[in-house]
Length: 268
Image (cartoon, rainbow, N blue to C red):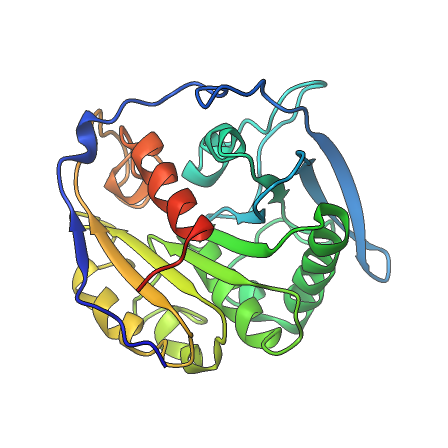
C-alpha cells in the first residue's frame, strides 16, 4: 500500500481568479436534465454533460439539502453551492458531468437520509448510468454534507467496479451528526481518495483540526492525499454556507484546478 505523504498546504490561492467556462480553449458543452429511475416510483434528477474523450465522468454531489437549483432551458443549474457554481470550470477541464439532485420522494437529503439504504440504491443507479453513458472512469466529487453521501456510497460500492475515485471537499467531520465521516467505515473505501479542506473553514461541523484524523482512517485507499488550502475573498454569510471559506469562495478556479489535476493523475 502506498503511504500518504505529509499534508500539503496550498497557500495564497486567493490570487487565482474565477475563470469563465471555456478558459481552456474549448466551447462550453451543453447539458441536459435527465430523470433517472432508481427505485420503485422514484427518480433522481441529474444534469448530464458529455464530452468527447473525457478523462473521467464526475458525479457532483452538493451539500445542504441536496438540490441543484433551477435549470432554465439551455442553461446550467443555478444553485450557489460550490460544486454546482463551479460545474462549468470542471467541464472546461474536459470532464463529463453528472450533477446529482435529491430524489423525487424527499424534500431534504438530511444526515440520516444520506446514509440510508434508499440513498445508496439511488447512487448505485447514478454511478451505473455515469459509467455506461460516459464511457470513462467514474469519480464521486462531493462537498460538505455531500461528503457523507460520497463516503457512504464508496463504501457500499467497494469492489463492484462502479466508482474509480472519490474527492471529499469541506468534509463533515463532527462527532455530533449521524453519518458524518467519524461514524463511517472509511477503511473500506478501496479507490483513490483526495481530501481538500480550507485551513480557516469556520463551520462547526467541519473543524480543520479534525480532518487529518479522518484522513488517516482511509487505510484501504490505494492512493490518498490531503490538501489543506488557504486563500479566498469576498466572504459573506454563514460560515457553513456557500460564500465563506467552507465554500472556497473567491478561489473557485484554483480549487477546481487542484481537483482536476489530481483526478487526472492521482499521486500521494
